[in-house]
Image (tube, rainbow, N blue to C red):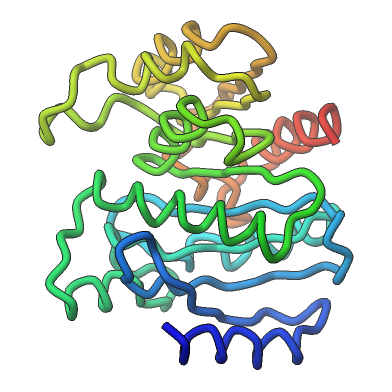
Length: 247
């Protein structure tokens, strides 16, 4: 742990705005979390977004998205969760470390990575607003986590959430129950056919909520923002509108 702290300090001396940097920090159980920092500037009061990927993927889900968020004036950190794989040529390093240490890697095990990432971002990079952004299973988990502890994030952006956890023994309304307690603004979106997955969750949120459904079929998770999809502009317009209304 001392070696890890030293490496973080060493790295901090070479932070540069406009340059992507990979960092490593500990999860709550000691697994090493790998993340990519995308700093538009070095002002810690700049709104900061922590980006979490979908199942079987990695922080590479945000290779394009994070740069666009930088252009909009946000600093970002794209995180590898231990429940994942590879995408866009980016290997999930947190998954590799968890397996090396004999740790389980289900969706539920990734909760501690999400919490650790939000706490780490708040401590080191986000002295202004901190936004939790998730995709698919992580989109649901951030609703659960922030609903249960509003100190962990100031806003939630959730791409294709749902009650994905019954196979792990959770109740069919596990996410919905925490959504009832959510005290921060939330934005939810998904593919058009996925509305039924998250609408009960959305309806449970007390207030300060917005959603977007595309006129086209749309796409699952944060990849709906990738420029290769012709309908990505609609998603971006909705996300920008939400961010601008709360920042």
